[in-house]
Image (cartoon, rainbow, N blue to C red; front, side):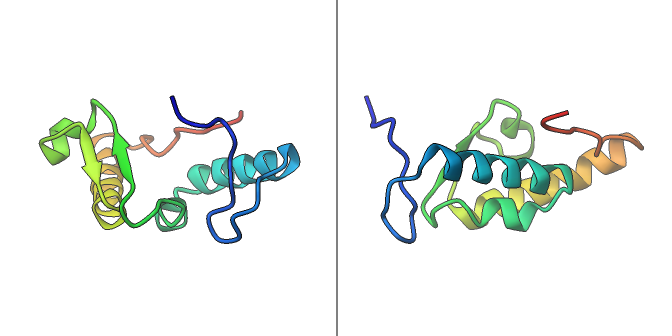
Length: 94
């Protein structure tokens, strides 16, 4: 089982609860603005994302690598916008 302690990737210091809450609030605000590039920048270059919904667009439930994750989310957003006029209304923290 992995560690439950979060560290800042750039500084290596352990995040405080306040740091973590600020990060989560900013992440949710970026998600609500559909700022895909800003959200994906938080992934490590070799990061992975898993979602059963990814299989439809990517052929796999696992997307590997920050660039592939970015490409997936841009494609998914484009597809959602074309599918329904209000598809972009997936909001967090409301």
